[in-house]
Amino acid sequence: MRLTVLSTLFLATTSLSAGAAFAAGDLNVICAADVVICEQMKSDFEKDHDIKVNMVRMSSGEAYAKIRAEARNPKTDLWWAGTGDPHLQAASEGLTAEYQSPMLDQLQDWAKSQAESSGFKTVGVYAGALGWGYNTDIFKQKGYKEPVCWADLLAPELKGEIQIANPNSSGTAYTALASLVQIMGEEKAFEYLKALNANISQYTKSGSAPVKAAARGETGLGIVFMHDAVAQTAEGFPVKSIAPCEGTGYEIGSMSIVKGARNMDNAKTWYDWSLKPQVQSRMKDAKSFQLPSNKTAEIPKEAPRFEDIKLIDYDFKTYGDPEKRKALLERWDREVGAVAN
Image (tube, rainbow, N blue to C red):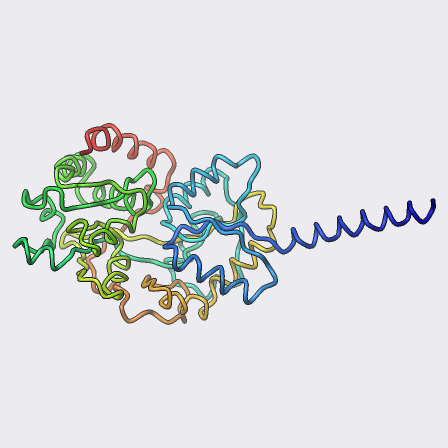
């Protein structure tokens, strides 16, 4: 009888220990970048660490909504990549945890500024300018003029030839919305967006989907981050990327640890690891041509350089504010989304 009791206790203890060990070796990640770099990051991290990564790919808006919905019982440990505005919104709402990585001093000023402005609840991991990519074969065949300015996208000949994502689900499209408001002023920006709607064939869920459709010849042009257009060119598609002549906004792709993460130590391990130069230098191998946040990481030769682009002084703090973001999205829903083709 005593042996039976001891055996039962031993098995119970062993089971608990095994469960604890398994839990300690898990990391639940939302990746808000392109699926190829998401898979590469997961694979590289698991090679370097005895930690199993459970990864879900979502757009930035979807990631924010999921983390917000699970605030009382977080199922996600870490949110990697995606535009900085929803990361800043999550930080301001107390959905993400403060963490100052020992890697901070190695980062570009714009990446450190992102961390400081959020109370160290997010950090910049890459950056990229907004623009578009168009299918040069389609434009040549149909005799379209190359669009080099925001104003050119309103040309009647481009009716049904343009795709952009929905800003409710896509950080890319929200950056476009916020950029146009900063370039033109809110009233004129919404007048522009309502006029542009006549030329939009589809509002996609994913930010990079429009230029992928252009690459396949399904549409003429996609409004995206320029590095996503460059990625299609690198794959051999007839896509040319454009930086708008009037100026454009840019993203600081960010990373945040979820407040109350079940695997907090593992989340910090990923956080520090992903800021290393050798990790960021590998992004180009997944056809990700953003500007890395680590100062010593290799910049891909294909990456659109900020010094070659007319950038606006994008106000991340204002347009990452929950109330401002909510107001702009609600107005977009009323005035653009409700009458979308």
